[in-house]
Image 1: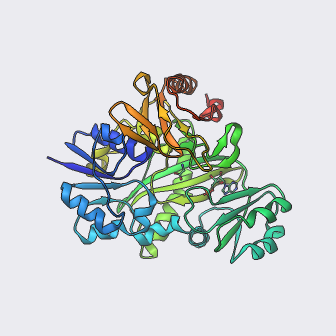
Image 2: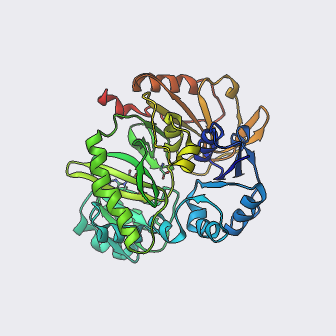
Image 3: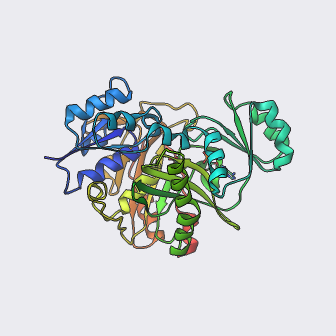
Length: 406
Ligand code: AMP
Ligand code: GLY
């Protein structure tokens, strides 16, 4: 009886638990803490205190043969180090390697040292110092708070007046003042092992709250995964210029990277450049990716089975709660889930049985596919129409940018 444990409780972790529940190599899936959607495919275990030691105890208690970490917080806290010290198998980077995401300042310095293409930037200690370097960088300009901010610590300002006011709203601490890059964003994720990085299919997130990439940034309002996002040549170029030098530099620094490495890329006229690293899978990219993954995910982890992808593109549309990405309202009853023909990943719900209500900003990820991208988009939005809750909102243009490739 082989068992796998997923750490986390969002839509990405629901997709992981869903895909692992279909693996021929695992008989049982656990999640800590999980969520009401995950509870439909796995056994959820409460987390008393989200500390590395508590996770070790949970893994021991459920006798997990493998643990897969979803979010960055446990990684930044050293969960992988604790598991390895306890002799337990886990997928993810060590605390030292997780620094790539935890600090924008660290990752920028790292990219410059490793020769990885990225936006020109200056790091400063506070808002006043940021103001002093703005003219040197030029406008539009990008302002980034140093620490973890759940995708919300980045401001793009069109001009100096806006930037001077906006920089004061960032949390205290160092600020990276960065050149604005033009192009299309691509989420490029690899599974890094001792033997190298194995690329997943490219996907695209939609970070802005509203259609047409308008409105404030969110954790991600939807994603699609389509074999046409990058050509084989572009993928090879990203591996050669970005992923391999990153993994090499991490190893050279004595902090080899294992687990999922996510490079947020801007495909600029002068080639791919890294906007950010994440040390984990993306949310909602994972929902679209795993929906399209043909391989047995358990075999990918345990037997180095290669990633194989279904030809059909997949699309995930996030249904958000009233108020998101600002202060949200919880407790709105969700209706129509049992009518929905798509795969619905739960991100922020409460409830059980057939009663569910909103309990987070991103509530559900409605995910479907089709023989071409236009049909995948239509199928997904048709499925979205079956679900209702008060204050529900979503972007209506997820995947649209990809249509030009068909
Ligand atoms: P980050 O957390 O660094 O990925 O930034 C969040 C989002 O801000 C990115 O997904 C981009 O949409 C945007 N962004 C960040 N840096 C830049 C940049 N240098 N140029 C243009 N857009 C950027
Ligand atoms: N979807 C972007 C992220 O997970 O950071």
